[in-house]
Amino acid sequence: MYVACSTLCFARQPLERALRIIGELEFSKLDVAIHENGPHLKPSEVVADVGLAAQRIRIGPSLTPAAFSIEIEAASDEDYIHQLRAICRLARVSTVSVLTIPAAKTGSSVDTEVQRLSRLANLVDAEGMVLTVVTGIGTLTERPATALELCKRVRSLGLTLDPSAYINGPHQGGSIDELIPYVRHVHLRDTGRGPGKFQVRVGQGEIEYGRIITQLERSRYDRLLSVAIHDVAEAPFAMETEVRKLKFLLESLV
Image (cartoon, rainbow, N blue to C red):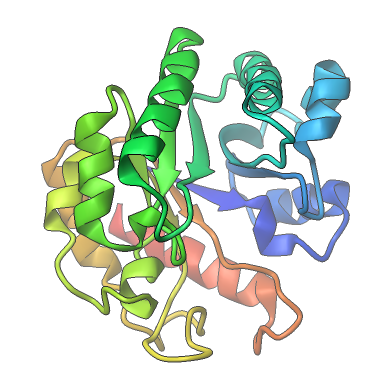
């Protein structure tokens, strides 16, 4: 397993500065957030110039992109596909193998989502990459049973496991063992239960890092563990300190 850092850990910094900080923290792998409403690289910018986007997310041979977290705002299904194809081209030139998107919102039709994800997973698979949906509060994957159903019904679809969704969300810490075989990527931060505790200082929450890593090892997981602490204005801690702490913790476990 390899420890990576999400660009969202330094979302209040310009992208170039965020990458420099991540490099200074001695990460070698980068999890790039490509969000249309995000602070850094946007899908529309990738569509406009894939080459320039590739240059922006590389700062040297010691820090390389390894995964993309994608949120596309599209006027139509065809526009969504057009933007996803451009991101696949970026992934190919950047040697990125895992693309993560959110599932449809909670309450959406599972059958309709299976149809949508099947089309997207086939496209990404044809490009030689893996498509995953992140386990997220407010989406169909906020409950393990539905996340499992999506993976079983959509060929080649994987999961980006964000265990915070199952501690702080409606699942409230129940078992996620059945999801482990479908995990292709992992987002980690520390999390408690209840309002305002989605993100807490490392060591003050309920995420069992050792147990999660042991479960992944049993399934022969050999991919990324991304530090994904969100850099938000209300965060009650120094971001670099918490990112470094979680990096060292994860490295000690793998």
